[in-house]
Image 1: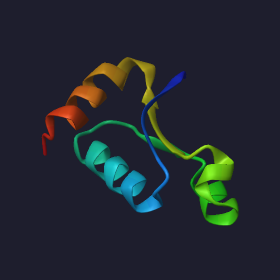
Image 2: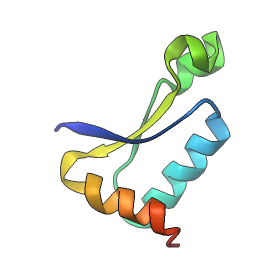
Image 3: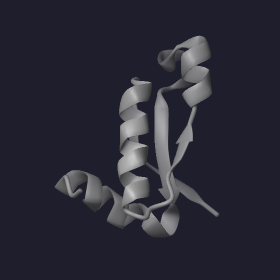
Image 4: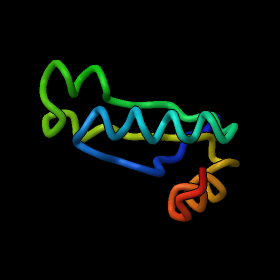
Length: 69
């Protein structure tokens, strides 16, 4: 399964909120670097990435951009 980054942030709370919204909309998000961000700081880890499977990427981006609930 290939993952695509659809959102990145330096704030863990923002990443968790995006992940929760995507899960509620039946997407399959994965957070990358969230542990590194709390241990080493988000800048050292390149930020926190919210990723989804490649086949969900377009719809997930549209969902986030549209502000749909």
